[in-house]
Image (cartoon, rainbow, N blue to C red; front, top):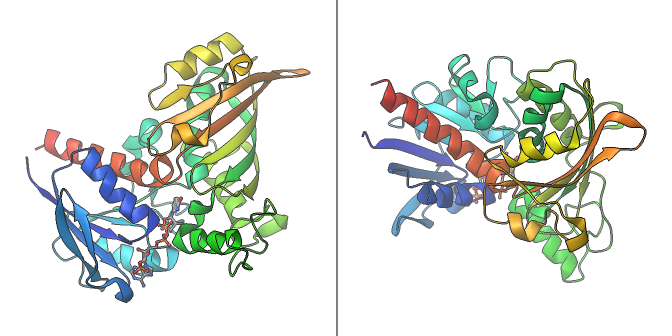
Amino acid sequence: MKKYRLGIVGATGLVGREFIKVIEEYKLDLYLKLFASKKSEGKKLIFNNEEIEVKSLNANSFDDLDFVLFSAGSKISRIYAPLAAKNSIVIDNSSYFRMNPSCALIVPEINFEDYKKFSKIIANPNCSTIQCVMVLKPLDDEFDLKKVVYSTYQSVSGGGQKLVSDFSRCRNGLNPNILPYDLTKNLIPEIDEPSIVNYTKEEIKMIQETRKILNKPDLLVSSTCVRVPIIRTHAVTLYCEFKKEVDIDKVYEILSNTIGIKVLDDLDNHIYPLGEKALGNDLVYVGRIRKTFGNKNGLLLYVVSDNLRKGASSNAVQILKRIIEDKEKNK
Ligand SMILES: NC(=O)c1ccc[n+]([C@@H]2O[C@H](COP(=O)([O-])OP(=O)(O)OC[C@H]3O[C@@H](n4cnc5c(N)ncnc54)[C@H](OP(=O)(O)O)[C@@H]3O)[C@@H](O)[C@H]2O)c1
């Protein structure tokens, strides 16, 4: 098998470091080139017990690469991803290309084949969106989803290294520099910048990306995104309405048999999805599964997953792995 060459842009960040771990865990045999900002030039990161020196990103960084994973924010992806895509397949973690009609937005368990139909820039969805659509897709296939209302509980690492440091300031009794309020004293219902009609950008991302991934442009979706004072793993409650009546036994059966999902739901014994369970693995945990009062087509769910794994790095590496397998098959 060919040893492919992979570049990671943003290798020193929270997602970038997790990329390296996941690639090791998945035993992908790749040459890695690591890039970050000028300030990280010369830093060394470990991959398969070997040190790799981080290089400062420039326009010639991609000359000899087969694939490039981007996780350095939208501004960097906007400029450099099209350059990388001239010779390489790009998987981008930022939000910049997600709603571009010529880019695929992929959760491999749902719509992997889309990557063949679009440009060489593949977008990795928003972290909270991924864990929700993983659960919604098999239920949509059975009951035909009409409406979903999300309420999120998103951890600090979702905002990158700078937000984690800012939260540390709060925990040390200092005023935050980035967070609008002290997150040790408040849950904060504001993630990313304000957007249209009193929604935040994060909320709009969840709405638009859900429709695109599920290929349901008319799906009714609303979202409220809240930052909570834990470091890692996001939780989301989902209120769903389907066109067909919900059979709760069938819901358990479907979710229990879906790859990538783990049902934890035994309230009497205090069993439900928790961050500690989700931390460091690729599963999406679902529990607190209930029908709604007064609506036979309604369903409530509580979903937890690791935002830095399935919500970011693992989803991207799973896309990469499947493309490599496809290439090898078609040789
Ligand atoms: N965190 C999550 O849960 C999550 C989930 C899904 C998607 N994402 C997306 O993934 C991306 C990265 O997130 P993160 O949480 O890993 O952020 P982060 O911890 O802040 O890391 C940012 C990375 O970008 C690099 N970078 C910054 N400016 C650069 C420049 N001018 N040239 C090259 N590299 C530069 C940084 O390098 P230095 O160390 O040298 O500054 C660092 O490696 C963002 O687009 C984010 O929206 C994050």
